[in-house]
Amino acid sequence: MDLFRRMFDAAVASAKPANCLPSHLPAPPRGRTIVVGAGKASAEMARVLEVHYPVPVEGLVVTRYGHGAPTTSIEIVEAGHPVPDANGERAARRILDMVGGLTADDLVICLLSGGGSALLPLPAPGLTLADKQTVTAALLRAGATIAEINGVRRHLSAVKGGRLAQAARPARLLTLAISDVPGDDPLVIASGPTVSDPTSFADARAVVSRYLVDVPAAVRDHLDAGKDLFAEPWGDYVLVARPADALAAAADVADQAGYNVVSLGDSVEGEAREVAVRHATLAKGFLAGGEKVALVSGGELTVTITGDGIGGPSHEYVLALMIACGGDSRLSGMACDTDGIDGATDAAGAWFDAGTLALAAAAGLDPLDALGRNDSGSFLAALNRQVVSGPTRTNVNDVRVTLVDPR
Image (cartoon, rainbow, N blue to C red):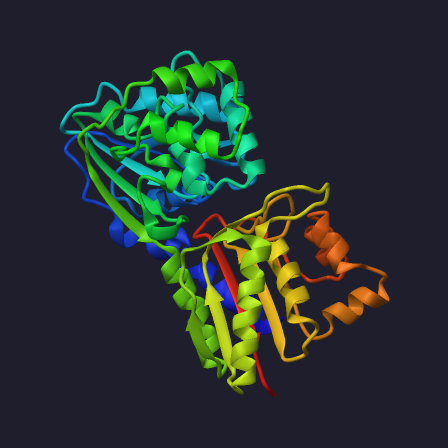
């Protein structure tokens, strides 16, 4: 467990705003500096900006409940995630109003991080927050990817898909973003409120159809009638932290511990239990070759919920990986979300080692039953195999590790 925790902590530290943001702050403008933003890291980003910026600023950022940070001149609003709520809607409307009416002498700094999509839920005209809540919840439950969900959100929004950038004209705009998405696509991070959107309403309709999601009539009408907006890009966009950086930091810890690091990439997607089986197969292959290896991967997995249990993608991955490894004492694994919260749990993720299956048997716990009910969170919590960090106030997606030690 010690090595797993050190790898997780190193990954998180690489993406802490205090470590990655200050070097990217711009020179002050002739006019005002307005700071806006959204995401699980946005409050901490705002706090760090206030500490390091040489002139007074003003503004508002919205973050998830429990992820706030102490600031002086930038207001912090906490709101619902992953399903948006009224606090997020009001904050998004205020942000849109805040960047209007500025001049070319003014500067807007937009702080974005993972979770920003749910936290800026300003519906397009004719839609309600309830409409967006229904669609978001249905797509999450159906197992849609974050890119697919954000694509739909952009076309139901008055602020995403570049609309915030358009509202800020003619002020200078700088977006500072912490990426939590595979490929680090600015359009997907927080659904791209400050970048132009090349996707179409037809693309959004295709996602809804693909997952057989039953959406409100107003949403269907809006998607059917919507006119695509391919606005010219406005402003500069800088990634201050990426999943690849976090994965590299975790890999360095494993390397120093004597493992040959094999990276499976920072953009792994798919059903958590299916990816776990593939990774277990890879681990067994290295084991057969007598190699001491750390398999590391990032990205964001999904869970199609069919049971009534408690868990999240990282927990389900760990449970499925443990089952697939079959109790081999030479294999162990961990998966954690770098924001500190995995799914419907209060833990960042979980881990298993050689004795976990035996411990479960002694406690009368059936791992296959837990997996079938999507109850990985309860199962691993009962065995004291969770990684609990609390909100980290950053978010560069998941870190997964499988350790192969022939000894």
